[in-house]
Image 1 (tube, rainbow, N blue to C red):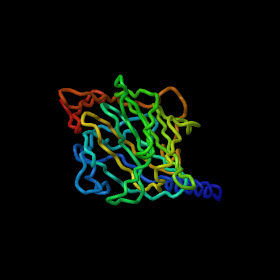
Image 2: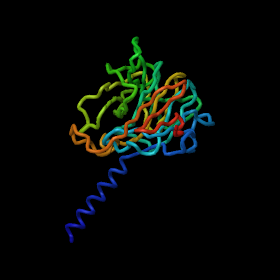
Image 3: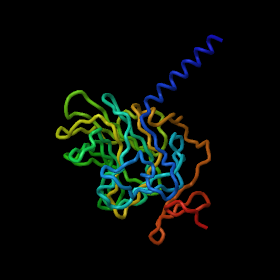
Image 4: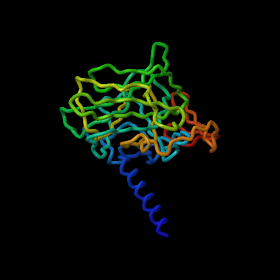
Length: 287
């Protein structure tokens, strides 16, 4: 009896510890066709509503804790001030990991779609540090990149993204003691990892001309009139393991049924096909 009690107590302590490491989660579980700021906890610095719409179905990624939950977010259009923010508990030391699912359906220009920000939300302070980019090369291949701030140039990985594939993207912000020496790194996965890789895909990057921040906000950004990025399963935590949830087993076989999801453009409208059903970009089921 005493052993059972001690084991239960230990498991409870581990669960509480893991929960404390998770700073924020977002599955975009809002009505189809609504905008992200339907949840007032998402806000624009200058007020008003975002253009970023909630779409269905959710993105799937085998083994990821944020897979196929709720709905998804569509980032499209070129609106420079369309930068919905959400606050989370400020981190003053160690690491912040941002994990999310990305389907880069259409990318026609280069720009950032996600960043961290500190607690300074003012008319003159814009400390957007840890900017995740997508872009295209001369042959119109879709790329993913990372930029610390706005001084140094963005760095792009030598990887071509598939428009019909869902990726797990992880950005790490590492707080380093001292001034203007924090580091950012980017990891990209096409299947669930079994552990944190010893080397990131990009980074670590730093920028001696940029401010260091204590991350306290996450923000999205729309920049491409003809672009369509689908985002889902956003998780922010202080460890890699807690951002991703249970890590993979390394087995090649898929043990659970997986929905086949494809997105394509038909007469100017995004059509989403999931198994035998079709939806418009706003999640309306098509006959």
